[in-house]
Image (tube, rainbow, N blue to C red; front, side, top):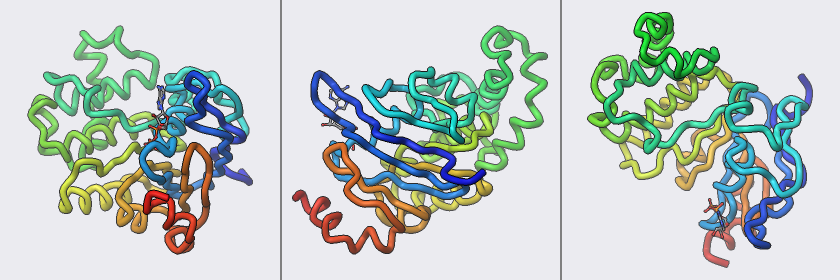
Length: 247
Ligand code: ADP
């Protein structure tokens, strides 16, 4: 289809009169990796939550291949094809990565929690679950409690859970937050490997990660788009440099 796969127009989110997102237009091209960057408080997380339905916009629209998403629930939006990586805090401590992924696959087909107690029902998804765990490098850790996974592996599991939804657009919220250099490099490789031509939108602080992954970058400041373009252009833009120096 022509045009952007994901398109936001005039997005606004007000918190008691304060505009955390203040009229944002965003075009995400199909098959691209699009980074949202900007100084702390710029509105990145709020925008991310608007795109995934975790917040309702005060005004504006978000369309996936032309279909309006604003006002739909996060579950509905995920099923229509916009899935986010979940936060580690949402993992179940005693469940294994394999069980997490099986549940995500069951949820996608609408079986969900009703079948949680039924090993046989979940067993339907074990083949696909193993495949996904292999893809994110967790095959050797498929059967340990999630709580015992190292931090980087928990993040890889979140990625597998998002991929289980087979989304058109994968949203990654700071995939390298809190990681040391090695884990950052591993995560960049992982995102490259698993995305498989899929459209990715990521919020990312680490500019090296943005440089290595992103085709296009949208820079936010004070809830507005300050600049948009390829990373090589953006990084030289004097307005962007000033914003990062605390202008
Ligand atoms: P970023 O992710 O770029 O750091 P955020 O989207 O988290 O920025 O925040 C943008 C602005 O909106 C900040 O000033 C923040 O304090 C404010 N904000 C975010 N969420 C809320 C909320 N639930 N209520 C009030 N203000 C909020």
